[in-house]
Structures are given as structure tokens and as C-alpha cells.
Image (cartoon, rainbow, N blue to C red; front, side, top):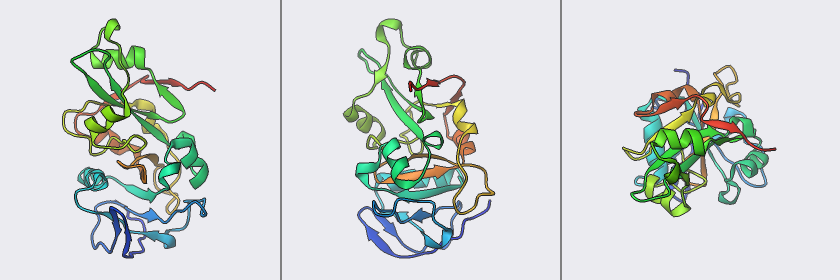
Length: 231
């Protein structure tokens, strides 16, 4: 697996800690972003290795990526710009290469939950595909889980929920279209395209080769999970 060039630097940033790391099983870089620096597509010479602090949700996400042998890259972002369209505009990415990880919840007790990953320019087919995949009746059709429910289920913050590091037993459905989507790697455009997901919190984004999604334990790749979003 090809590694991206890394510039290692020790910088404190809340629960995320930049420091030298001698061996990586994947290409893990982070571009230093700020609201005054709008483009995240800088050269690899401005990249920095990131190691999340122990016990944080970001650590769990990165550990899951490493366990899968994923090729991925990490980017920090302003938490107020974490929502997909704002993040894309601020940091120079495209909505068509970004994903949304949606938590669905049944209407009635006992509650049934599932996470669905679709491209951000599409929407989950909740009433047909979602309901069928969750095994729910028409009278108990699912809807989007409340923010508090999503956090309690996944341990992640809405706006940062991602398919990596979900607790065991949480159903994960990935739209087949995600596997053939993406944008070029900034530092290494000859690599396969990557798609963007949350990183567990609103301050971290993960760019990942979408082929790894099919290797997440228990995942189900679903044809037609999404429909075009209204324009």
C-alpha cells in the first residue's frame, strides 16, 4: 500500500495531538486548515501527522481505519463549518465526493436503529429501503434519529457520525453508489479517488478510499439505498 509523504510535527489541539509516528499501516495525513485558509488541497509538504488523544472518539475512528488497513487522510476543520455544504465551500471539496452518515430510528418502542451511508448530494430512501432493511412495518416506519439518540447510539457527534468505529451491533447500510464515487487525492492524484466522511466529532474529517467500506465488519452494501436530493 502506497504511503503519502508526511511532515511530522508536535502540535497540541484539544483532544487531537500532532506528533511523530514511526510506522503507519495507512496513508494518514492532516492538512492544517483554518477559516482564513480556505483550501485543504495543499501539497503534501504542508501535511502533518495526527495522533488522537487516548480515549477520544477520534482515536476510536482512527483505530478502526487502521484495523481495516485503510488508505485514508485526515483533516481538521472549524466545528462551525462541519456541515457538508459549508465544509465543502470553506475547504475546497465537492459535495459529490462527500458522504452523509444518517442515523435512523423506529417510530415505536422498542426502538430499532440503523446507520445509513449515502453520498451527500443524495438522500436516504427512508420509507421504502430504510424501513425494509430495518424490518419495520408501515405503521412503525423509521425517521431520522434525534441528535441525542444518534450520540447515545454511536458515541459520535451529529455532523461527525461516520461508518468507522461504530459500536458493535449497530447495523450499517452503505449505498452501493458510494463505492464508485470520490475525488482525486490532493497529494497523490494517481491513487484511487477518495470520499469524505465525518471523523466522529465535528472537527475532524476522514478522506478514504471507498473500497474499504465493503470490508467493515457487518456492513451491508445496498443497491438503491438513496434517491436524488431535490434541487
